[in-house]
Image 1: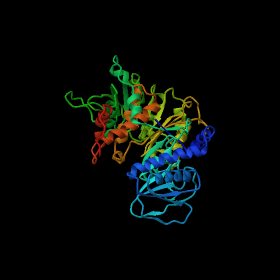
Image 2: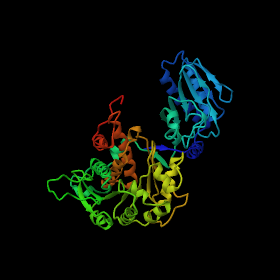
Image 3: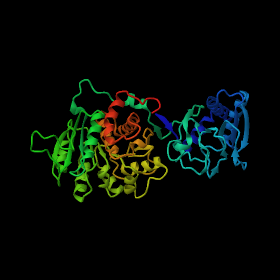
Image 4: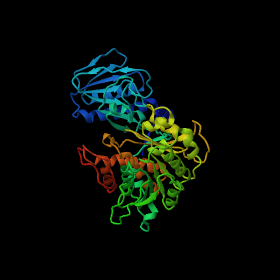
Length: 482
């Protein structure tokens, strides 16, 4: 996992490093990394025209070191002051944006670029918030950002992700030990997901899915199939109000894939029936397509509160809670972990406000309030967890430590109905395979995005995903250029 450090965490790490090495040494190292990246982008360097926009702080100093190194290699370098009223940059092959770094506050309007030169940003594109990715003014659009010590949240979320281009994390001797957030990588899943036990059996990794309704039959199919393809050995599905046909030759109901076992639940009071069926399972998903009637709400709440396994609370089950206080009462009283999977609209309904630009803070707020794992869906999926929260009996204060994992493997391909149902099933399957729920949620979100990357460029639908998940977990990777 790659550390992702906020501006305050980076400042603390810088101060620690300055106890061991001089500021000039750190600047020399940073500038060398920037010069190396620039050289690779415009090779051969000799005779190439470079403009460095340099501010007065450390960011500008990094840029000036890079300028001197490129000049030694024969580049024609011009350094301009970021404070000058420069409206336009023309006649160059590459621009180094070293105007302002992670500590900048205010608005920055970069000069317009004529002739489409390449752009390298130093640490973060000037004018982009390091913590939220919010843009103030008119930053340059970088082709590459060379950032130091750790990734910054603003390089991964909001508009910052677009302005940053590709990202290199350069080691300059500043160690960020206490970053509360980390970015999940392929290798984390490849080495961290438990393999099937040679002596295992289907019940050892069993998952229960309570989802769907007679008019919403697709959700449980997608959820159950996602769980199966992610490694669940057995999936029990139950849809309130739907049962098998009395015709023995008839296929299973639409709410149950053929590999799953369908359990009958009555249409009104079904919580007790459901709880009887899941005691041999290792995880439960509840909510997709189940409906939002008052009757459904009471049954959903009863199942979540009494379930003897970790529960993934999704979709209509999230809507069963009328706010964070109701969630807190249930989650803090449970003996097992609770995983909440809201998208922005569901988050706003629970918190009574939108997540806002700082998605790490948003997910952490609900995690503290509910003592649960919170997976906030989005282009940067944010998973927050309070290790000491369960059993606390109430909200935790703002100083309570929160672990955060980030996933940026998703794409717009996943912006289609039903993909969240597949993800919920995957989370439950990874819990059943032996991962703690917090890690299971993060790994499932990462694989969910990676699986989509090996699917079709256009026309991907949720039903394609489970098969793609199986293929990615089996080692298939995207072909170059897709």
